[in-house]
Image 1: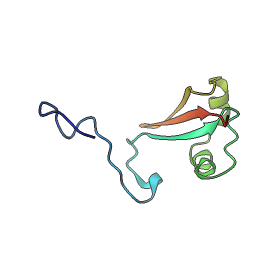
Image 2 (image 1 turned 90 degrees about the horizontal axis):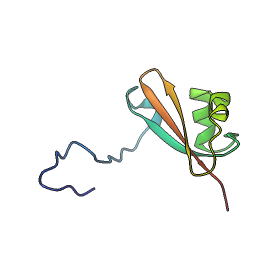
Image 3 (image 1 turned 180 degrees about the vertical axis):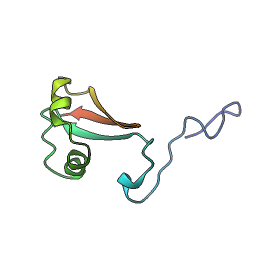
Image 4 (image 1 turned 90 degrees about the vertical axis):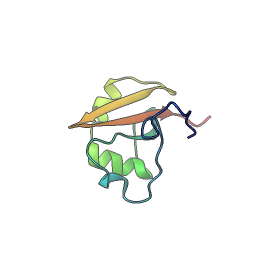
Length: 86
């Protein structure tokens, strides 16, 4: 991401890192896409479900396609981006 000369280059930037996503620091937030029914039965969603649980918590938030459900686990926020195939 480009920054203006006034901005701190350490702030407001995206860093791409290859490796085990779940080995990142506990203070890092994570995000991924799920279907509105929160099934999480394929791909990386299965790993998120196994690691963070909270399916009923997510369903209770009653998010619709295009909205974001959130779980807080210790110092980490996990964002579930609801989407649907059209």
